Image (cartoon, rainbow, N blue to C red; front, side):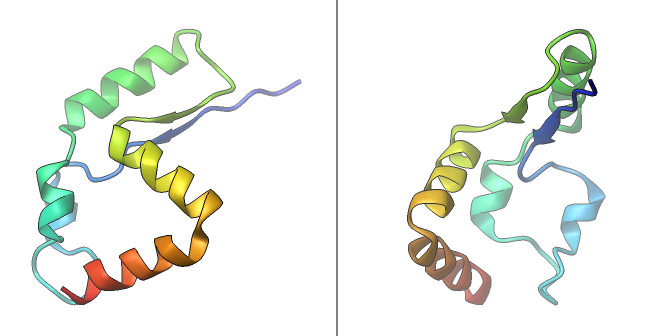
Length: 87
C-alpha cells in the first residue's frame, strides 16, 4: 500500500507570512509569536522522509490544541478564528 505523511507546521517565519490573505500587511500577532523557523519545519519533513511515515505531525502544542478544539468544539473554534481575523 501507499503511506503518506502530513506536516502541519502552523505559522512559519517566511516572506509569505507578510500577506496572510486577510488584506492586512501583517499576520495576526499570535501567529507571529508562535511561528516556526523554516529550518525547523524542514527538519521535521526530513525526519518523516527518513522513516516515520503514515503520520500527521503538528509542530506546536498550539497546533495540536487548535485541531483538538476544532474536532470537538467546532463552533467555539470558528468563533475564535473570526475574532482573530477581525482583530
